[in-house]
Length: 347
Image (cartoon, rainbow, N blue to C red; front, side):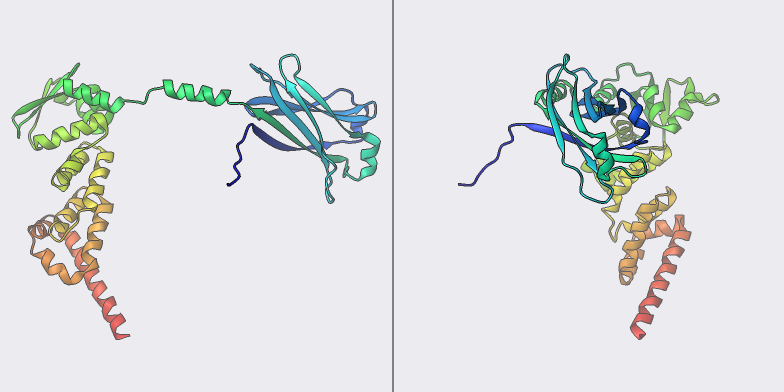
């Protein structure tokens, strides 16, 4: 039967190296010299050094933060030689609480330290370690906080606001579908720089208009864009795919919705084919989508022997008419690639 090991306690250890300068000068100094605050095991500690207490050099560890219960801890120190092995470690343990906040640890006699070789250039090093026994109370408290803190539902809340139209203060009449859609100016202004310019601009009629006509965008696309503005999601890209991705990309570019534009680009990059590459390349060029353009170029150049199939598509004629410079760029790359292939074949 295999042996098993279960931790009954949990401890946190922290180590610091302290350099004490001016060894001779500290001989006549009384009292303790304090270090900066040292946080270990969820508590704040302070280490203090007493240079001369009746010939002894002492270290003191103090709990400086409030503790709701006893804090079991140990304090260890040893001298560090610049070239040889460190001295034997000395350790003291204590239960720290409100009435017992510090513990002393005799380090060494001054005369012994002088003769030991640990002092170099009037300074010496002390290696200090604190071990704090931690219980399960902090973890339980953290778990309680997590359980009582609900997850954000902002997307659903704003989506419901769009659906129920509560508090809506502007309407869009979608000419292509013959329907009206209500929205909230503040949401549109916050999400779209174009809507912000139109609805807040000093010289635009949209600033005071209660109804704006949308003539050059399909109702399906406008409503999908509006859903994204409110919820930062676009389920249509998953359910309708590339059939709406191209049109939604155009809408996103028009209204300055860079994240939506990026989502459309990602969708289109995964669906490039012989039938769609020319149309998609023209779309990428017209709307400044460098990633989408590069993917289309790579698709064409991956097998230039099939370019005649691409040139027979309706999308190719669209590319030729709308973006002749891009087509020229493609043809130049194809010629260059053919030359490279020819050179390799000759060699």
